[in-house]
View 1 (cartoon, one colour):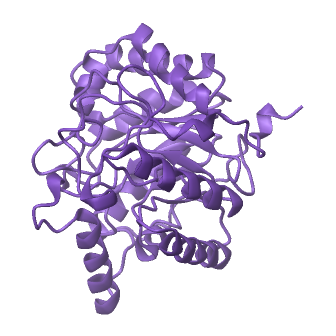
View 2: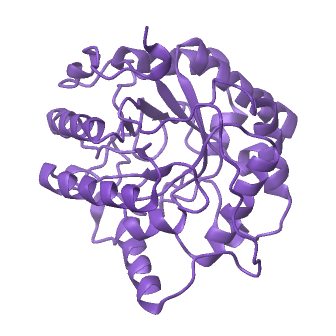
Amino acid sequence: MSPSNQQFGHSAVSRRQLLKATCAAITAAGATTFLIGDERPPATTKPTLNVYKDYGWLRGFGVIPSWAARIEDAWGFYDGAKMREEVALARQAHANCIRVWIEFTAWFRDPEKITAHFMDAVAAVAENGMKVMPCLFNRWHDTQYDYGGTYLENIRPGWQGPHDYVKSLVTPLINDDRILMWDLCNEPTNTPQEVAWLSEIADTVRACGARQPITIGTPDGLPIIEAFASIVDVLCAHPYVHTEPALIDTIAGYQQLSQKLGKPLMANETIPGALDDAAHAEVARYYTKLLSAAGFGWMGWALREGQTISTRRDRFDANGINRQGFHPFFTKEGKLRPGSEFLMEKPKLRAPWEKG
């Protein structure tokens, strides 16, 4: 999610700052970021479905259903009718993709039921004319109102439980055009432990026979993106800088890295939040324009006001304008936040499947 570990900005060090410091330390120490105790290189199977050279047309949102305070709530209390009602809002902004978060910690309570709920969510998005980008694990955590997901203590390369979860979701959809790509994890760090773990997860997805590309939703920071580059088909960034000049500089760094590694890059979570609607709209305007022009596209965090941290006005995070990260684009009444009406204008760039 890229918000900081502690909202309200009370002299807290943000998770983004900690990640950058970790990257610098690892780089300075010359530490490896490849597999632990495993000499196998990551799988190199090339995707053949929904493969694109760039993603300037990408336009969408991350979805946390409004009823969920934690990721387990989203699936344990899943409501198909409400899911359809909420994802339909994105079409007002001409979205063509929805990033759907799910987790092993939600699935293991009742694998059969949660798998069925996930498949229904895929259908709900597709029924509204959009592709789905499932995010299979979450490594972003808040210290006060945590959304849940996977914790460092649970990351044990070789443990088969999460692999069974991945297989149950991926296998039925390996040839399914509704899946734009598989996002293995939201905002991991580039420690050897996490790189090894996600290398195994990537191998599992490919072993299932998935034809769609693989990505990892990495937080801002070129060393983190590069650490996972050998695992993914599409590089991914989460830019959250707070000024237009800073975003221009950030985009230049992404372009250089993409060219260096020979892989396309996209932004599947971005645009800083704000309590002030006008400030949020101003940031959204230049973010969407610049990221689209750079060929990266954008997926805003998050779609609708709800219960989880950063989607509530009284539980904002520190990763926003004036350290007030209230991120939704739509209110709890289902209306675009004032000032964001420009998103209802028909975009110049259209998704490949929307052309003609």
